[in-house]
Amino acid sequence: MPTKKSAAKKPVKKKRPVKRRNHLDPTPKILIFDVDGVLVDVRETFWLSALQTVRELTGKRATMAELHKWKSKPGNNDDWNMIANWVTALGHPISYEEARAAFQKFYWGTDGEPGNVVKEKLLLTGKQLEKWAGRFEINLFTGRTRKEYAYTFDKWPHSKYFRMVVTMDDVTRKKPAPDGVLKILGNRDPKSALYLGDNIDDALSAKAAGVRFMGILGPKDPDYRARAVRFRKLDALALLPRITDLNKWL
Image 1: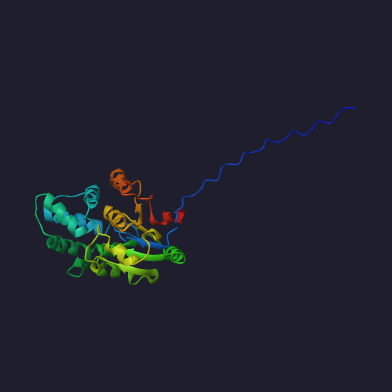
Image 2: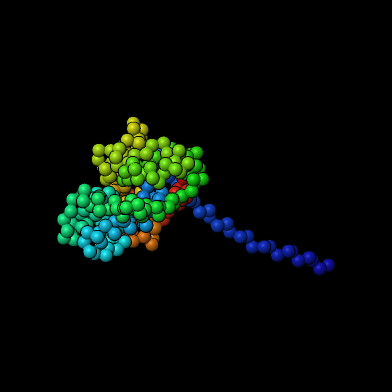
């Protein structure tokens, strides 16, 4: 009798290896955020005001790429200090106070006309911050003054999730000194914290405090390669295109 042909076996599909997502070990308990370029888009506020100030004081139409080159120099997280150094290097010596006064009218406005500050935009939602606050302690260490911080955040209901806010007015030594980070930590283990910033001074501050650091830097940002190299030399754990990409690590 004819025998039945056995059913052809279906080829077994090989399972693709599961791609592991990035992970921080140990998982931080404390998150510390810079503000400008991290939580707030300041391209049309602080950065535009800086370019306008340089042009007024020197007659030179400066570019965003030039601004970031000056921003990347240690100590220039403070926009007024950066402007004073930049303008002086262009052959127009000015003091820190003169740079500050010239900048203020573009940022805050004059004669009843609003300045660039009204263009500020948050880079994360309140819902996202609330989610992080449910798992971590949230703090800010910013190079802003207390007045600049208050303008942006006092009316935002989700600012209640910030346990501590340290501005330039709250420390004796500004970034890149670690004073603000240490003020937030108190006597706690630096390894329990993670600092996120977009400036070289942020990375220097974190390193001096013994705190892990991630840089906020998108591939289309001005002077990306040079800034990326600097961040990696300062032991940045990762370069995140935007602050919400932190979720891939937590």
